[in-house]
Amino acid sequence: READGRRVATDLARAQSLAAKVVRVECSPSGNRTTVYLASEERVELRDFGRAITAALKGRVDIRHVGVRDAAKAIGGVGPCGLQLCCNTFLTEFAPVSIRHAKDQGLALNPQRVSGVCGRLMCCLVYEDAFYRQQRALFPKQGRRVATPRGEGRVRDVDVLARTVRVVFPDGQSEAFTVDDVRAVAAPQGGREAPDDAKE
Image (cartoon, rainbow, N blue to C red):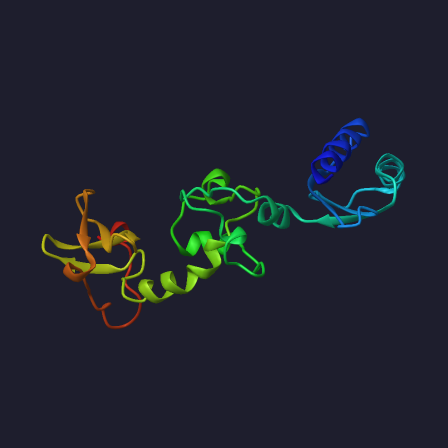
């Protein structure tokens, strides 16, 4: 009954060009009550759809609107990491995710790289954020002058997971070092140190 109900609901949604996706259909054991779950980015007008689905399925029909994340949680799937979706396994609630989390973790701000199968920012960015914040405290900040086995240079970027620091030298060349091989150089007395290209 649930499979038939989902097929009917999907056909009706397409026929009415409804900007929503039928996620799941649940039927009560008695068969006289059906719940249809619809997912969409925005609220949609469901009055006509409600009348049509009630006439087609007969009995009482409840329509519940859910977000795209709830849809992914209900359907399940495999994330970019190759594992089953977090929302479908252990996440009990969705925390707000912002692009700042991706920036703090040094990820390329490419929507395809930071978005989950639901099309929203990946939930794992939130609960991995604390780890990155803790680890970044062990690294020199970008632009900071540091001493390396090759000499002094400035930090261009860091890789927290690889525990490496890429340093650019006055001759324009850059090289990656482990964080243990890099030591911050104190700024000159009297204020902030100027960039290399501003010094004569």
